Length: 305
Image 1 (tube, rainbow, N blue to C red):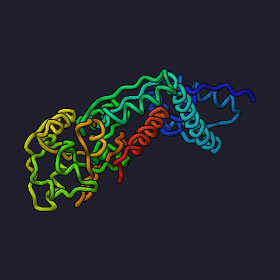
Image 2 (spheres, rainbow, N blue to C red):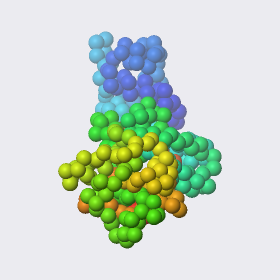
Image 3 (cartoon, one colour):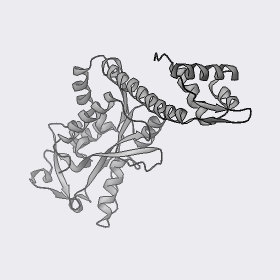
């Protein structure tokens, strides 16, 4: 038996098997009813078996037709999976990965992961967007990025959140600060009255600091509010105050004049997670990038400790 049917013919058959109507099938596949009938006739001739019982009023699958429908659905799924996997391999050669990340990650772990990935896959285009959580969620939804790295669990029905790392808070202070002599962790309550330099209200860094001090019934009132990590580090180096930051953020702005000490009571961690669109699996290239990012952030000294 010579088999020489096309994917188009299989699609026409499966549509008719579902609708059991030549008229509705013709509308679905954008063919005339006679063309649908001709397609079915060619399949039956190739298989040497009737696939449908047809009368003037009804269309029903024969037993052979039911078996053929089951098997062709499986074959179509396998073909789609084959195409997807081949495309993923191609993407590792000439594809594209786009991601959104918190500024502290975009200036630290992500470039290191990009460098490692680019060394192995120089033909893949890499795009990075510095972004806070809200805009990052929108970019994932719109398909502008494959995934995002944020400090917030979106808890939205259309987004999936996968925990990646836990980022412990530390205190930044000038090297000549009295607390710089401490060799162990410093309690939040002991630094509450110091002049603080912090990110603006609404940022995850600020929210976590406020939460930590509330456990001591202390209202967090920073002396200075600035938007950029580099500015915070410069102000700490100038002796204008101290700053509580997650470890990954602190590492991005390391300076000789600034030292860090872990914070305790409570030991506070900011979770970093992977945001993806529900129902849209990551490509092979994106999965490899996620694995590299996980390695980079987990190798950082203050993460998870």
